[in-house]
Image (tube, rainbow, N blue to C red):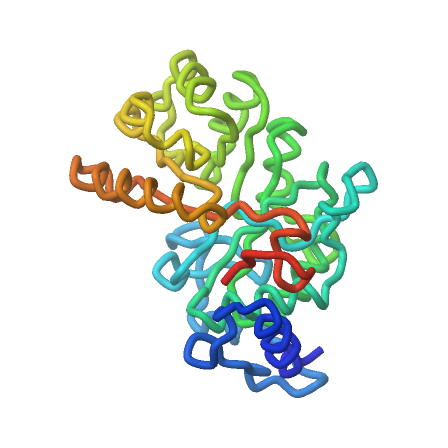
Length: 296
């Protein structure tokens, strides 16, 4: 599939809705130089071969890339997910719409994105591979810690399926046992951990499982925008965690408040541990599905 029809369809829709998102000054339609039968391959993304045993890298569905090549990166998003147990609005099961949405992200400067769909949520690895081969963005998939350490290690070290796709992120939803397993796997593989929960629950969990016990794990504590102002945020940052504020772009007042808080935290010396993300996961939030605000 080529992406050249993407712009006009959404420009027309945006004009009807009075949106400036698809203003030509902000958005450039493109087929990225691909012919109908062509796709991006790993060598197109990274010309120099990376030794995953020795070189710093981030694992994408197309293979390893150097950290400095990530560019503008969205962590915490959902591109393709199709669990039969999910509500219809959460089933993102159309590859053409995923291509359209990721295209919009790339044309406004986005370069890398992490899909948070685990196997339990209906992860579509072949779909993500196709997506990465159609749009020039680094696509990173994740593995959930619910399956235990052995399953995580198998996916990370050996890959999944006939295409041996390897995840680049570990997700933790559960309690201390799950977190301990994730920390152990992260120490041996170098993958970062993404911990879901409210500030108080994350702070209490890391009170029992001190991050300092980990040799090398980079742990991201995921916080909603309205939780970023609490005093416990400092505790999390001082313990060595990265803190990600989620829900950007959904509420102007929250965004303004968050921006002020992030500037304040940066001034206190925590700028290198702060991340922001949209955490978009439903059709109603994606432009390609007729929602908003979309990945742009």
